[in-house]
Amino acid sequence: MGPMEDLDLNTPPRYLDLKEIQKNLPQHNLSLPYPEGSMGRYVKFSSQRTRVGWNNVLHEVLMLNHLAYKSHRAYVFQDYIWGQHHYPWPLYKTWEIPSRTPLGALIGGPTVGGSWEAGDPAPRSIHAQHWDTVCPEDRIKVIWTHEVKNKFNLRWVTGKRIFDVWNQILLEAPESCVEIRPPSRDIEQEDRTPLFDWTVWGGGMILDMWEEFRSSPVSKLLKASPIVQRAVERNQRLFELSSPGAEGSQSPFERVLAVHVRRGDYLDHCTHLAKYASPFESWSALPWLPDRFEPPSGGTKTDEQMQEFLSHCLPTNEQIVEKITQVRRDYERDVLGRTESNDHFITTLYILTNAKSKWLDDFIKHLVKTHQWKIITNHDIVLENAQEKDVEMAIDMELARKSAIFLGNGWSSLTGNVVHQRLVDSNVSMSNRFF
Image (tube, rainbow, N blue to C red; front, top):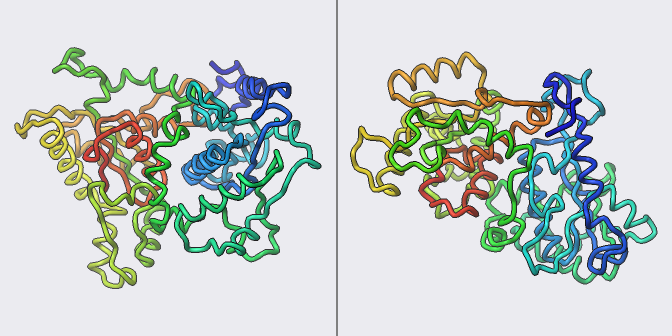
């Protein structure tokens, strides 16, 4: 539980409790033997993206942690820095600008200093504040991202090619402390992009990393943070059926279809994606998943093509209902072996959405009246303190991760990250669906 000053949902959290835990991680002991301690091997990626949406940061952070792991270095984890317009509190209430959230509030596992599997000799991740202690400036080997990109021609290449080049550099560097830095702002924009930039995540170029990344301890040991886990456990009652012993259900989430419905900014965003015939993003683009969609080559040029694209990126109410109905039917038939169309096992619909209340209220009324779903939305989740409000998006994602079926938007980084975790959890392909 957070300290008393973090109980007020109208005030941003200070995270004094978590910061104290973070400061006192056991691997911050300088006397530990190699590869930790004062002579350990470390890598800090100062090139990591900041001030963008959480899920754009998350998939990069996990891949960089995997890179550090493979190069036998401790990953230096940093706070999540918000784009201020996304922050849950108004500017005048913030403690600092830009606003920050400790990474350990959002996720758990080795990425934020947790242990590796028993017997794994890999050094544990350290926090950026400890980096300043264990790696003073005179011991740091600085590697500039644009110089490596230019030397090895790392533009419009696959994720595996980028990963292998950087892994070799980090393995061969004799220095114990390596910092990967972006160039100054007087360098061309193209040269200031992260190691794994939008062309890799958004263009299907990351997919040749899938098998390796899925099997990585970074993926396998990734879990909800204690803050997120507490919120999920407390809200589980919302998903429970009125008759607890109904049909052998061991967990209420076994009967849940979680659907990610984007609205708001997605009207302009989907139009932009259609113009450039953008494929599904990150792990949503894995070719063996259901619901593959190939945009027309050369971009969307006709009204018919645009409407087809929007049916996947920004579906209408009727298209959403039709897809939800199809997804439930497919899962119950192909996974559960049920053929009785009116006797449903999947009875609860969890809606993750940024939609305004009027649209959402009307949509829910239609679903309940016409299709007899039990409806829960992310707006129904009870948040007990400001820390939970701060990580609300991570709570949504954990609920989607635990659900029997997940129906997402293939261009959404949130969907891509949920699909990654569900596949690592060994959920069947048919349980990961797309509009």
